[in-house]
Length: 143
Image 1 (cartoon, rainbow, N blue to C red):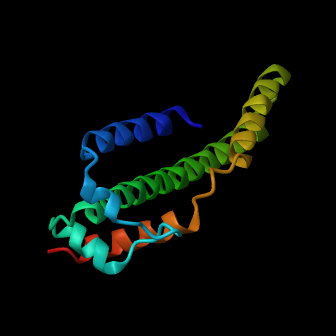
Image 2 (cartoon, rainbow, N blue to C red):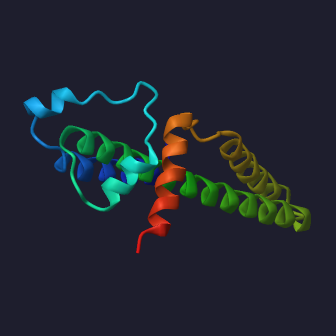
C-alpha cells in the first residue's frame, strides 16, 4: 500500500474511532443488513444529524467507510494519471538521449513507473462503492 494512502486511512480511522459510542443495551437491538448497503433514508437521517441510537451508529460507521473509499478512489485516480504523465515524459526524454549510461538510467526509471502502473489499487466491495456514491449524491443535495 502507498505510504501517503496509509497515512490518510490511518488518520481517518483514528478520527472515526473517537466517535464510536460506548456499547449499550440499545445498540444490541439493531441488526444491520447482511449486505452492508445503506438506504437513502438512513443517509438522509445521518446527514440531518438526527441520531437513531444503534442504527444511527451503524449508519455513521458506513458513512465514514464510504467517505474514506471515495477519498482513496479519487487519490488512486490522481496517482495513476500522474504516473502516466511521468511515463510519457520519461519515454520522450529517453528518445533524445545519446549517452548509454543516461539511457540505462532512464530505462530503469521507465521500468519502475510501468511496474507501479500495473499494480492496481485494491478492489472496493460493491456495497461500499454503492454507499460511497449514495453518500456523495446526498451530500451534494444537502443545503
